[in-house]
Image (tube, rainbow, N blue to C red; front, top):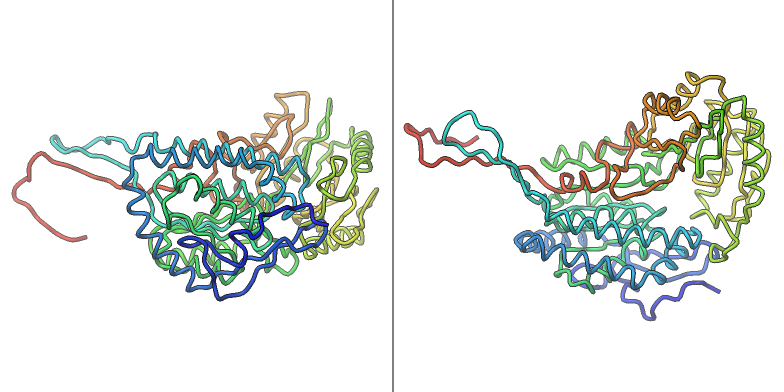
Length: 494
């Protein structure tokens, strides 16, 4: 029996959200509970015509929204943040059902999403521009921020509620309209729930559209001429050896000017790679500890034996099963494709000489916590993103080798360095080509104030945080004003 208890009938049942809940004569996206396989409901898959109609409605609504005082836009976002906390248990339960993540993770995602939206509500209160220097007396030169227009938001399944809010909230706060395409794995907690929350918060009609669907829907969103920017958090599922779904490290804000340039950048983002995160833990003596949630474990050979024993004890103590149980961690992998990919990575790496100390097999979507040693560059478990409870350990002899191994990837999201010598850890951090480095802390560390994002193939320079969110969803306009028209005047069109 399913752990979910959705409203019956749910407003999103067999519908899309575009100018209210409406029917769409297209395919159906079936939503399942990952732990049981039981159907939770269905949403419609939006067609290219649905995308075009939504963009046209959003363009008109955005002009009126941008004309509102910033305070009014902020008040609606603050109300949405409050409603998230009010309905937090229902939302977190839906997250657990759709993603397979455990209950504490769902609850964490609810609270972080509420905070993201609350912080975004204050963006409109920031300075809207600056007075710049001018080369001529009598000319006032102003650089001011203006909303971009209609923002397309494409989000992944792994933290669907939080990662959608990270784009939706600042985009709305800056005076834009949003068309959201959630991942087909999580269209309710990653999409439909936002429609319900913002509608209840008083967001004017046609400013937020939720259009579930697959690649065709995403392609239509990217191509639509009325969509001025795409905020994309995702991966490249079509790579033969790395058929990955979306992951939060990727932030591809596509071209804001010029449709051909936009399409070129979209294609380039798809070709460029998988937009993976590489969670890296580096353990150095003395005082090395276990970096939580690391995807690669680089361990000094002096402490490798003790480190491996401690990691092995931790892995063997974990219980896999129903994510609603308090004694379970982790729950199921999100789908069969991801589970099979994790199994393939372990098997291929083992055939190349890696050792499996515990785990390495699965029952359906439930993958045993796995610890591997003897891992080296060139093995899939070292080179690829796993999306499963697999901890590969690679040893090194000195700091130079540790840095070389850490940087031996085109991906650079986050690393954790465990070392009691903070000066040594800082020297290593200075040499890492990684967007976020946490010393004596976990790799999965999320705060709305710090710039969250990777470098290399793990990002494109648009980090998410309260420092830069305003700039991401604004255009700069240069405005000059003179007290009187100079003579002679030459009028021309650029």
